[in-house]
Length: 190
Image (cartoon, rainbow, N blue to C red; front, side, top):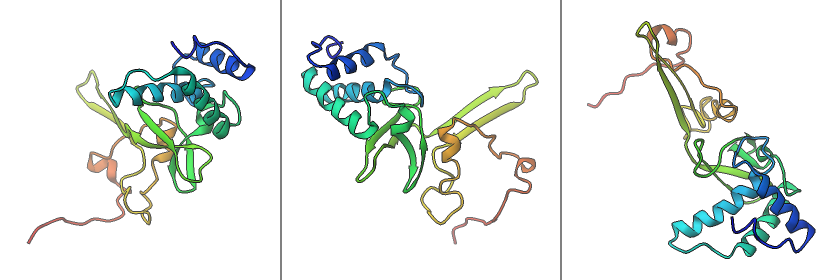
């Protein structure tokens, strides 16, 4: 509220305040207010989590204007154009933001021209009990089932679907796994 109440001392500041005033607080990939809005809210959130009172709004707005222009080329880039998910040179636009239902915490990594999702909620499951008593589950993972082994085909195989909010049926039953198992092994301790 303090930021949008600042005086419009330049065309750029006026444009930024208008974008923030009209932002619907959504963080979908096509949202034109999220890049600037998330930046402003993140500064307030960081101050609060550090035990400080709300910081001075003018330097926050000025800094967020510079950051958004630097990374997005304009004050209202599409959120998915600047907020990305993936690894190395493989990444996709991702929705979500700090303290949202789809919590995604992003930052600019060295040399990148975008923000990269570095934390947040990465494992989603929807469980539904059907009228006939059957349970149905759908889920997604932000990377893949072997996210620590870059040589595995499952290192990043769910990331694009994660960014597109595609859910898959987990392979719970023997029937679901037919034709999908590539290796079997037993884990035991001697």
